[in-house]
Amino acid sequence: MNITRQQKLAGLFRAFLNHESVVDQPTSLAAYECDGLSAYRQTPLLVVLPETVEQVQQVVALCDEHRVPIVSRGAGTGLSGGALPHEDGIVLSLTKMDSILNIDALSRTVVVEAGVRNLAVSEAVAHHGLYYAPDPSSQIACTIGGNVAENAGGVHCLKYGLTLHNILGVKLVMSSGELISIDQRSMQSQGYDLLALLIGSEGMLGVVVEITLKLLPIPECARVVMGVFDDVEKAGNSVADIIARGIIPAGIELMDNLAIRAAEDFVHAGYPVEAEAILICELDGTAAEVESQIKRVETVMNASGASETRLAKDEAERLLFWSGRKAAFPAVGRLSPDYYCIDGTIPRKTLGVVLNEIRRLSEAYKLPVANVFHAGDGNLHPLILYDANVEGALEKTEELGSKILQLCIAQGGTITGEHGVGVEKIGEMCLQFSNLERNLFHALRDSFDTNGIMNPGKAIPTMARCAEFNAMHVHDGKLAFPELERF
Image 1 (cartoon, rainbow, N blue to C red):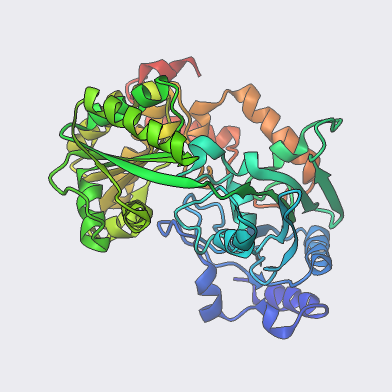
Image 2 (image 1 turned 45 degrees about the vertical axis):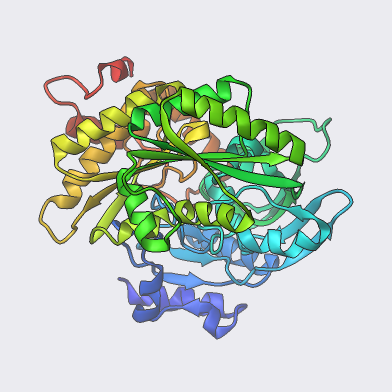
């Protein structure tokens, strides 16, 4: 680490930030060396914690002038290494910008700073009978700014959409330090849809400092049906069958036996530990609508091979059923020293096929895999269990993870549904997109960030990176799934 450069930058930042808002001590910097994906670590040069939009502008302008890489960070709950620091750059933490600026119950909107926690939004508007729909499992801690960066979803994204579908406007600090507002509240908005471009861009186009969110009325009634299956493929096929009947659940989640046992041991949610898979299906709306849909869902589950269905008897049990799913990641973490979380998306109709192929790959690599799915939109989260203390274990795990992502692409899916690309999946971007498409991505990025300081090295691979990835993953001239060879 170049201490002289660090001290110089720290002095420049402290000219307009509080002393404690510039972190430069090694022990304090260590807290920022990774996000929720702990497999990759890097200590930043500095961490800065601005408190106002104007301070963010000053930080970014200074970094642009001195060509200092910037990695924006929220609560650090990301799972793809998107907030992994740059060794010669700063981490721009937005956690001090945590104010809810305006609540408009009449128009059902709320304006928040980037550091506001996801769950805090719904808590702040509950007395108006409103809530914010996207609900990642980390919603108690994750920030809205981070949700925008990754286009986060959650268990209710099937019916109510991802972050993209619930954002009406943002304020963005450009790499030059200039501030722009992007507002799509009018249905007659002209020009390119920059809002859709920014959401999910992983901090590579600028720093989002303020967000206008869409709120929804709290449903009159919400009930949960749990389907119990003795075969994971039957559970997967049941999801497609339910939606094919015209039923759109508020959320429908799939957990396999390993995930079921881990969650039950952790939170005692009342899960059947002998089941090969369970579906947790929430239905909401008016009481009459929900009652009708419950009967239809139970009928479909039984016809699809469920050994039984269980209806949550009251609100407390509904929340209990969800608590196991929400706690699945930390619960699985108790089974092994480490786990590697995959995030891919596939067409619903291929759920059963993909689950069986993941099981085959798990056996071939001799690495246990616990499966947790946002099954309604085909967003899967296989958790590969391993021990990083064993030599070569991480590399073997990463190879298995890559095979699962290649499987997703081969089935007509994508390499991420809500966790982003970051550094974890940057190689698989070489398979997901052609050279022409990746060059367009780079051109778009360059138009926002001329000097390349915003989260460099993430999400969009270079030609050299793709050549290296292909050399490592193409064996005997062939990929694991021949369908990908068109790229």
